Length: 187
Ligand SMILES: [Zn+2]
Image 1 (cartoon, rainbow, N blue to C red):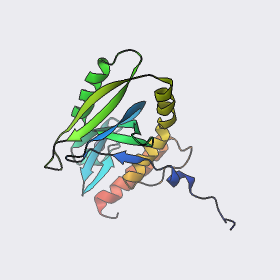
Image 2 (image 1 turned 90 degrees about the horizontal axis):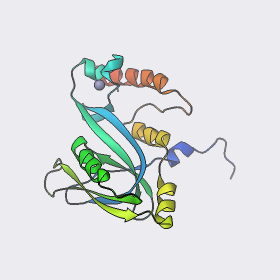
Image 3 (image 1 turned 135 degrees about the horizontal axis):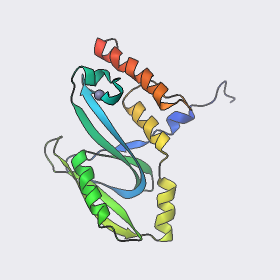
């Protein structure tokens, strides 16, 4: 009945990451928050790029190519909050639509991949919805905190836990060691 320790509230906050699968479009309202990140695909996993400007990214040092992803906070059709994963090309399409967005409107985005190959390019289409009080309340409620988005990504990538209140530069050092372990084959 009574618990010895606090329940793990952080894992309860794990956010669903939505990726368009071939022939299965994803749709939701763009709520505002977004995270942009460079990653590396290495030994069958995605790992974050620690940016070579800091000269700290072990995967840049060994010449592994980088891939860009953007994660948009989204309100799904059933009202849940999720993060939509977009490639650079798909995000550029979204940006073009956003420029045409009439004042007082919000974006209902659809991300899709043509049926067939898993790596078919993602394309985005958009409908404009009015900023009714109902829509605005729904959007504000579903908009994700950026820290929660970052933590969800670090869990998705199986990185060491990002301690509450830990500074990003401190965490980058920990991740850098972790990535080095992956390179050395210890993880
Ligand atoms: Zn890198």
